[in-house]
Image (cartoon, rainbow, N blue to C red; front, side, top):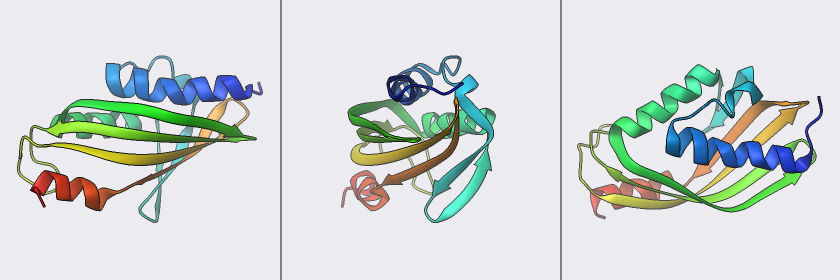
Length: 138
């Protein structure tokens, strides 16, 4: 079934508002292909809805109050682009950085490619250096 542009944008919004902020994957997992090709830092990794759940869990184990402010969600054919700001506060070790109790705010871009009614590829781009600087107090 081919989704409308509005439906694709709503699915992407739900990933952040439902899956990330409420830990409820029910509204989005049926739209994830298995595998989903996840592109980050030049690497392409196949994952699944379980893999995305684990990614959320990984972040939530180290950060509290993770929040996404979606500024733009744009659909162009089979690709949805989301421009957002991510905020959170570190509560435990993350990638070798002991808990600082500090908050961060970074801009992030995500791209989701759909085939029919499934997300088949995801690209993530955010300023990891800025995030690290904020945690370290630089």
